[in-house]
Length: 304
Image (tube, rainbow, N blue to C red; front, side, top):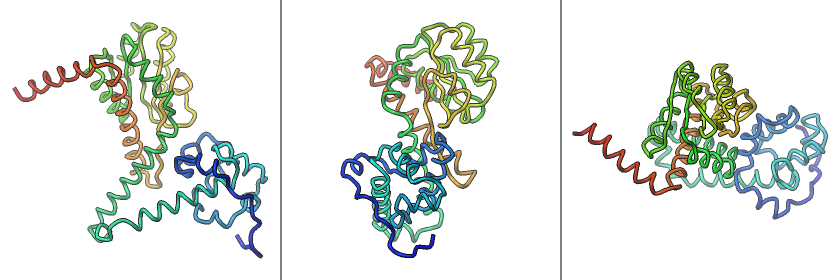
Protein backbone atom coordinates (compact mmCIF):
# COMPACT_ATOMS: atom_id res chain seq x y z
CA UNK A 1 0.00 0.00 0.00
CA UNK A 2 1.47 3.39 -1.04
CA UNK A 3 1.13 6.22 1.44
CA UNK A 4 1.53 9.87 0.67
CA UNK A 5 2.16 10.89 4.28
CA UNK A 6 1.77 9.78 7.88
CA UNK A 7 -1.34 7.64 8.36
CA UNK A 8 -4.24 9.14 10.30
CA UNK A 9 -4.20 8.06 13.91
CA UNK A 10 -6.94 6.09 15.65
CA UNK A 11 -7.62 6.82 19.32
CA UNK A 12 -5.10 5.35 21.74
CA UNK A 13 -5.83 1.82 22.99
CA UNK A 14 -7.43 1.51 26.37
CA UNK A 15 -5.83 -0.46 29.20
CA UNK A 16 -8.99 -2.52 29.59
CA UNK A 17 -8.86 -3.70 25.99
CA UNK A 18 -5.18 -4.54 26.13
CA UNK A 19 -5.54 -6.35 29.44
CA UNK A 20 -8.56 -8.27 28.14
CA UNK A 21 -6.51 -10.05 25.50
CA UNK A 22 -4.96 -12.73 27.67
CA UNK A 23 -4.38 -15.05 24.73
CA UNK A 24 -2.62 -14.03 21.54
CA UNK A 25 -5.16 -12.16 19.40
CA UNK A 26 -3.80 -13.85 16.27
CA UNK A 27 -4.57 -17.23 17.80
CA UNK A 28 -8.10 -16.06 18.53
CA UNK A 29 -8.49 -14.76 14.97
CA UNK A 30 -7.32 -18.08 13.51
CA UNK A 31 -9.45 -20.11 15.90
CA UNK A 32 -12.61 -18.17 15.07
CA UNK A 33 -12.01 -17.75 11.34
CA UNK A 34 -14.17 -20.62 10.08
CA UNK A 35 -17.18 -19.24 11.97
CA UNK A 36 -16.85 -15.74 10.52
CA UNK A 37 -18.78 -14.03 7.75
CA UNK A 38 -17.16 -13.46 4.35
CA UNK A 39 -16.14 -9.89 5.22
CA UNK A 40 -14.81 -10.95 8.62
CA UNK A 41 -12.72 -13.67 6.97
CA UNK A 42 -11.18 -11.08 4.65
CA UNK A 43 -10.15 -9.01 7.66
CA UNK A 44 -8.91 -12.09 9.49
CA UNK A 45 -6.79 -13.25 6.55
CA UNK A 46 -5.24 -9.80 6.21
CA UNK A 47 -4.35 -9.72 9.90
CA UNK A 48 -2.85 -13.21 9.81
CA UNK A 49 -0.82 -12.53 6.66
CA UNK A 50 0.27 -8.96 7.47
CA UNK A 51 0.42 -8.77 11.25
CA UNK A 52 3.83 -7.05 11.19
CA UNK A 53 2.46 -4.24 9.01
CA UNK A 54 -0.52 -3.32 11.17
CA UNK A 55 1.33 -0.55 13.02
CA UNK A 56 1.21 1.45 9.76
CA UNK A 57 -2.52 0.97 9.26
CA UNK A 58 -5.33 2.97 10.79
CA UNK A 59 -8.77 1.39 10.77
CA UNK A 60 -9.70 3.57 7.77
CA UNK A 61 -6.60 2.53 5.84
CA UNK A 62 -7.25 -1.12 6.59
CA UNK A 63 -10.84 -0.73 5.44
CA UNK A 64 -9.71 0.97 2.23
CA UNK A 65 -7.12 -1.71 1.52
CA UNK A 66 -9.81 -4.40 1.82
CA UNK A 67 -12.57 -2.44 0.11
CA UNK A 68 -14.89 -2.53 3.11
CA UNK A 69 -16.34 -0.01 5.55
CA UNK A 70 -14.46 1.27 8.58
CA UNK A 71 -17.36 0.16 10.78
CA UNK A 72 -16.76 -3.44 9.64
CA UNK A 73 -13.20 -3.24 11.01
CA UNK A 74 -14.46 -1.82 14.30
CA UNK A 75 -17.20 -4.45 14.65
CA UNK A 76 -14.69 -7.20 13.84
CA UNK A 77 -12.43 -6.00 16.65
CA UNK A 78 -15.29 -5.78 19.12
CA UNK A 79 -16.52 -9.26 18.19
CA UNK A 80 -13.13 -10.60 19.31
CA UNK A 81 -13.57 -8.91 22.68
CA UNK A 82 -11.62 -5.68 22.15
CA UNK A 83 -12.84 -2.13 22.69
CA UNK A 84 -12.01 -1.33 19.09
CA UNK A 85 -9.40 -1.64 16.36
CA UNK A 86 -6.67 0.30 18.27
CA UNK A 87 -6.88 -2.23 21.12
CA UNK A 88 -6.67 -5.13 18.68
CA UNK A 89 -3.70 -3.59 16.86
CA UNK A 90 -1.92 -2.83 20.13
CA UNK A 91 -2.33 -6.37 21.45
CA UNK A 92 -1.16 -7.91 18.17
CA UNK A 93 1.94 -5.72 18.34
CA UNK A 94 2.57 -6.78 21.94
CA UNK A 95 2.19 -10.45 21.04
CA UNK A 96 4.59 -10.12 18.11
CA UNK A 97 7.12 -8.35 20.32
CA UNK A 98 6.95 -11.16 22.90
CA UNK A 99 7.34 -13.77 20.17
CA UNK A 100 10.35 -11.97 18.69
CA UNK A 101 11.95 -11.64 22.12
CA UNK A 102 11.40 -15.34 22.76
CA UNK A 103 13.10 -16.31 19.49
CA UNK A 104 16.03 -13.98 20.19
CA UNK A 105 16.43 -15.49 23.67
CA UNK A 106 16.87 -19.03 22.36
CA UNK A 107 20.43 -20.35 22.53
CA UNK A 108 22.20 -19.95 19.18
CA UNK A 109 23.71 -23.39 19.69
CA UNK A 110 20.25 -24.91 19.22
CA UNK A 111 19.84 -23.22 15.85
CA UNK A 112 23.28 -24.43 14.77
CA UNK A 113 22.45 -28.09 15.29
CA UNK A 114 21.28 -30.52 12.61
CA UNK A 115 18.32 -29.45 10.42
CA UNK A 116 16.01 -31.96 12.06
CA UNK A 117 16.35 -30.04 15.36
CA UNK A 118 14.95 -26.90 13.74
CA UNK A 119 12.20 -29.00 12.18
CA UNK A 120 11.38 -30.52 15.58
CA UNK A 121 11.16 -27.05 17.13
CA UNK A 122 8.90 -25.84 14.34
CA UNK A 123 6.63 -28.87 14.74
CA UNK A 124 6.49 -28.35 18.50
CA UNK A 125 5.52 -24.69 18.06
CA UNK A 126 2.81 -25.73 15.61
CA UNK A 127 1.41 -28.22 18.12
CA UNK A 128 1.50 -25.62 20.89
CA UNK A 129 -0.31 -23.13 18.69
CA UNK A 130 -2.98 -25.70 17.78
CA UNK A 131 -3.47 -26.55 21.47
CA UNK A 132 -3.88 -22.86 22.33
CA UNK A 133 -6.40 -22.34 19.55
CA UNK A 134 -8.30 -25.45 20.64
CA UNK A 135 -8.37 -24.29 24.26
CA UNK A 136 -9.86 -20.96 23.18
CA UNK A 137 -12.66 -22.77 21.35
CA UNK A 138 -13.71 -24.88 24.35
CA UNK A 139 -14.87 -22.79 27.33
CA UNK A 140 -14.34 -24.34 30.75
CA UNK A 141 -18.09 -24.51 31.31
CA UNK A 142 -18.51 -26.62 28.17
CA UNK A 143 -15.75 -29.03 29.20
CA UNK A 144 -17.23 -29.28 32.70
CA UNK A 145 -20.64 -30.12 31.20
CA UNK A 146 -19.10 -32.95 29.20
CA UNK A 147 -17.15 -34.25 32.20
CA UNK A 148 -20.34 -34.22 34.29
CA UNK A 149 -22.21 -36.08 31.55
CA UNK A 150 -19.52 -38.79 31.44
CA UNK A 151 -19.35 -39.10 35.21
CA UNK A 152 -23.12 -39.37 35.52
CA UNK A 153 -23.64 -41.76 32.60
CA UNK A 154 -24.84 -45.33 32.99
CA UNK A 155 -22.73 -46.21 29.95
CA UNK A 156 -20.51 -44.20 27.62
CA UNK A 157 -20.79 -45.22 23.96
CA UNK A 158 -17.74 -44.21 21.89
CA UNK A 159 -17.35 -44.37 18.13
CA UNK A 160 -14.86 -43.12 15.54
CA UNK A 161 -13.91 -44.30 12.06
CA UNK A 162 -10.46 -44.51 10.50
CA UNK A 163 -7.92 -42.19 12.11
CA UNK A 164 -10.62 -40.94 14.49
CA UNK A 165 -10.99 -44.48 15.77
CA UNK A 166 -7.53 -44.30 17.39
CA UNK A 167 -8.67 -41.52 19.71
CA UNK A 168 -12.02 -43.23 20.28
CA UNK A 169 -10.31 -46.44 21.40
CA UNK A 170 -7.90 -44.50 23.59
CA UNK A 171 -10.72 -42.71 25.37
CA UNK A 172 -12.65 -45.96 25.82
CA UNK A 173 -9.61 -47.69 27.31
CA UNK A 174 -8.91 -44.92 29.81
CA UNK A 175 -12.52 -44.64 30.92
CA UNK A 176 -12.67 -48.40 31.39
CA UNK A 177 -9.50 -48.36 33.49
CA UNK A 178 -11.08 -45.93 35.94
CA UNK A 179 -14.27 -47.95 36.21
CA UNK A 180 -16.68 -46.25 33.79
CA UNK A 181 -18.72 -48.67 31.68
CA UNK A 182 -17.97 -48.10 28.00
CA UNK A 183 -19.20 -49.47 24.68
CA UNK A 184 -16.65 -48.74 21.93
CA UNK A 185 -16.88 -49.76 18.27
CA UNK A 186 -14.98 -48.74 15.15
CA UNK A 187 -17.66 -50.42 13.00
CA UNK A 188 -20.74 -48.21 12.47
CA UNK A 189 -22.97 -51.26 11.98
CA UNK A 190 -21.95 -52.75 15.34
CA UNK A 191 -22.35 -49.36 17.01
CA UNK A 192 -25.82 -48.92 15.50
CA UNK A 193 -26.78 -52.31 16.94
CA UNK A 194 -25.40 -51.38 20.38
CA UNK A 195 -27.12 -47.99 20.32
CA UNK A 196 -30.46 -49.76 19.98
CA UNK A 197 -30.06 -50.67 23.66
CA UNK A 198 -29.24 -47.11 24.79
CA UNK A 199 -31.38 -45.17 27.22
CA UNK A 200 -31.73 -41.69 28.78
CA UNK A 201 -28.87 -42.33 31.20
CA UNK A 202 -26.32 -43.06 28.48
CA UNK A 203 -23.85 -40.78 26.66
CA UNK A 204 -22.48 -41.10 23.13
CA UNK A 205 -19.08 -39.60 22.28
CA UNK A 206 -18.57 -39.65 18.52
CA UNK A 207 -15.28 -38.69 16.82
CA UNK A 208 -15.13 -37.30 13.30
CA UNK A 209 -12.57 -34.71 12.20
CA UNK A 210 -14.83 -33.15 9.59
CA UNK A 211 -18.15 -34.33 11.01
CA UNK A 212 -19.65 -35.40 7.70
CA UNK A 213 -19.80 -39.22 7.73
CA UNK A 214 -23.46 -40.14 7.09
CA UNK A 215 -23.15 -43.30 9.21
CA UNK A 216 -22.08 -41.37 12.29
CA UNK A 217 -24.77 -38.75 11.77
CA UNK A 218 -27.32 -41.58 11.60
CA UNK A 219 -25.98 -43.12 14.82
CA UNK A 220 -26.11 -39.74 16.55
CA UNK A 221 -29.74 -39.19 15.53
CA UNK A 222 -30.59 -42.74 16.59
CA UNK A 223 -28.98 -42.16 19.98
CA UNK A 224 -30.84 -38.90 20.55
CA UNK A 225 -34.10 -40.60 19.58
CA UNK A 226 -33.51 -42.90 22.54
CA UNK A 227 -33.06 -39.76 24.69
CA UNK A 228 -29.34 -40.27 25.28
CA UNK A 229 -26.91 -37.34 25.35
CA UNK A 230 -24.48 -36.97 22.47
CA UNK A 231 -21.05 -35.32 22.42
CA UNK A 232 -19.37 -34.63 19.07
CA UNK A 233 -15.61 -34.28 18.68
CA UNK A 234 -14.80 -32.50 15.41
CA UNK A 235 -12.93 -29.61 13.89
CA UNK A 236 -14.44 -26.25 14.71
CA UNK A 237 -16.86 -24.88 12.15
CA UNK A 238 -20.30 -26.01 11.11
CA UNK A 239 -20.84 -29.68 10.30
CA UNK A 240 -23.80 -32.10 10.43
CA UNK A 241 -22.45 -34.18 13.32
CA UNK A 242 -21.98 -31.15 15.53
CA UNK A 243 -25.49 -29.97 14.63
CA UNK A 244 -26.96 -33.21 16.05
CA UNK A 245 -24.94 -33.10 19.30
CA UNK A 246 -25.99 -31.90 22.74
CA UNK A 247 -22.41 -30.75 23.40
CA UNK A 248 -19.30 -30.39 21.27
CA UNK A 249 -15.56 -30.55 21.72
CA UNK A 250 -13.90 -28.50 18.99
CA UNK A 251 -10.38 -28.82 17.62
CA UNK A 252 -8.42 -26.18 15.70
CA UNK A 253 -5.26 -27.01 13.75
CA UNK A 254 -3.90 -25.24 10.68
CA UNK A 255 -0.74 -25.60 8.64
CA UNK A 256 0.24 -24.85 5.06
CA UNK A 257 1.68 -28.36 4.65
CA UNK A 258 -1.01 -30.99 4.11
CA UNK A 259 1.08 -33.71 5.77
CA UNK A 260 1.70 -31.61 8.89
CA UNK A 261 -1.83 -30.37 9.57
CA UNK A 262 -3.22 -33.81 10.62
CA UNK A 263 -0.35 -34.14 13.10
CA UNK A 264 -1.28 -30.82 14.70
CA UNK A 265 -4.94 -31.86 14.81
CA UNK A 266 -4.15 -35.15 16.52
CA UNK A 267 -1.84 -33.47 19.06
CA UNK A 268 -4.41 -30.81 19.98
CA UNK A 269 -7.20 -33.39 20.19
CA UNK A 270 -5.16 -35.71 22.40
CA UNK A 271 -4.28 -32.89 24.78
CA UNK A 272 -7.95 -31.97 25.12
CA UNK A 273 -8.93 -35.60 25.77
CA UNK A 274 -6.16 -35.89 28.36
CA UNK A 275 -7.64 -32.88 30.15
CA UNK A 276 -11.09 -34.50 30.13
CA UNK A 277 -9.67 -37.74 31.58
CA UNK A 278 -7.80 -35.91 34.35
CA UNK A 279 -10.93 -33.94 35.27
CA UNK A 280 -13.00 -37.14 35.37
CA UNK A 281 -10.41 -38.80 37.62
CA UNK A 282 -10.45 -35.84 39.98
CA UNK A 283 -14.19 -36.21 40.38
CA UNK A 284 -13.90 -39.19 42.72
CA UNK A 285 -11.23 -41.05 44.67
CA UNK A 286 -13.02 -44.24 43.63
CA UNK A 287 -11.89 -43.65 40.06
CA UNK A 288 -8.27 -43.33 41.15
CA UNK A 289 -8.50 -46.49 43.27
CA UNK A 290 -10.09 -48.36 40.38
CA UNK A 291 -7.36 -47.16 38.04
CA UNK A 292 -4.60 -48.40 40.35
CA UNK A 293 -6.30 -51.78 40.66
CA UNK A 294 -6.87 -52.04 36.90
CA UNK A 295 -3.29 -51.02 36.13
CA UNK A 296 -1.99 -53.73 38.47
CA UNK A 297 -4.10 -56.42 36.77
CA UNK A 298 -2.98 -55.29 33.32
CA UNK A 299 0.66 -55.24 34.40
CA UNK A 300 0.39 -58.80 35.74
CA UNK A 301 -0.90 -59.93 32.36
CA UNK A 302 1.97 -58.20 30.55
CA UNK A 303 4.66 -59.22 33.02
CA UNK A 304 3.52 -62.34 34.96
